[in-house]
Image (cartoon, rainbow over all chains, first blue to last red; front, top):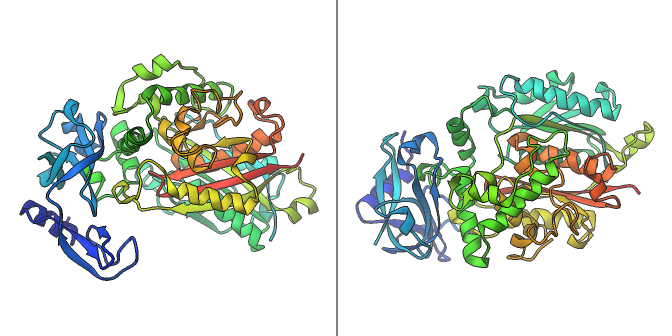
Amino acid sequence: MSDEGFDEWLDAIGEGEAFYLECDEGHGSLPPRRICPHCGSFELSETPLPASGTVETFTTVYVGTPDFTDEEPYVTAIADFGPVRLTGVLRDVDPDDVEVGLTVEPDVGRNEATGDRLLVLRPR
Amino acid sequence: MAGVRVAGVGLTQFGRHPERTGRDLFAEAALAAREESGVPSDDIEELNFGNYMGVLAERQGHMAPLMAEAAGLDCPATRYEDACASAGMAVREAVRTVRSGESDVVLAGGLERMTNLDTADVTEGLATAADELFEIRQGMTFPGAYALMARAYFERYGGSREDLAHIAVKNHDNAFENEYAQFHRKITVEEALDAPMVADPLGLMDACPVTDGASALVLVSDEYAAEHGLDAPVSVTGTGQGGDNLALQDRRDMASTPAAEKAADEAFADADISPGDVDAAEVHDCFTIAEVLAIESLGLYERGEGIGAARRGETTADGDVPVNLSGGLKAKGHPVGATGGSQVVEMTRLLRGDHPNSDAVPDADVGVTHNAGGTVASAVVHVLEVDR
């Protein structure tokens, strides 16, 4: 399955050129998007995403969906990158060592069970 | 604008009925509501039916006409879907339809069949209430989403797993005498804290169970009730709905639920009441933390104050404003697409005085119900009042 807009966004993250969509009022959002969800502006432009974010909340998941059974337990985190937040699977860190405020960077990983790409966050 | 009365209510036993079809479950609840109302089937002008995952559980789409047929109705039927708030929305639309004068009698309710699926498939089905691209692919589960909100809440306001455990204990206590509840077993704080972790910081005893069940209500106009001499002392006097971004990452704040605040504000203004008038509440405690967010959204508590309410004994059956006297989703059970209807059914019984826990609120005039979809990207609140 391909998801136009989202796939290209992941491509950009994988190439180290992560971006978000910025409207003319300065609000951030993520593609695919035709209109700013915060103010309704149609003027959306690709703007470089800050290189690092901080974990705002996270959970260690012990009972995952079928697609994630092989990874249990795994950590899903939401990190604040300023204009946008990103939800990702936190990798390269022991679940016991994760804490709110951890500095992370986005990357593209793969779900080994499905072959789908996914957004991962790694400590920076 | 026509007033709206609850003429009859019906529930199935909530619990595990893996062998029973959805149509049979809904028919049981609908026929019970019809019988209690005394309204002839020809007078029922519409069916508003809530369901979330029938396509996954029974490979059944287009459920509403099927459910009308199962309930012995010959009327237009429409399915409402807002994840866990599906039946609440079905009730809300029924209230609006009766108020508008479009119909005098509407049957509203919902159904979910879940336990015929294994845990992994239920987990997957529930997860689809989240954002597929930005959440589900990153391993977000339904418990995981509420765990993210719980940690955000703890970071902002403080609170502990023990505070949450007191909510689970309270709701199991309340379900004990409820004949429709899934669990008739009291638990202790220690038991809740020792349960296996599902999505840290939420454990198994913070989570509602997987449940089969159905709910139904016959809603009628004041005029119809008077004309036919119906015994219908409970009215729906307020309704409100709110919405929010689907993905948690896009919310302004992850430690509160603004959609429910909007729904509550609208419903309270509609009924011309304030939070201080509320005598009892049935809220959407799919996870213990959700009850905290709910009672804050309803204005029963300031933000950051709801976490200790159960522990302090303020929301218990003998507290100032009992919350989830039915046992809530936690212990009564959570058949997703039926839950919002069941809350209105339970509040009706509590106010009429024929609920096993009505003794806890003998003088209650005003009850509210709070039903939320997913991580509260949709929310619906109703105000119920009883003639005294």
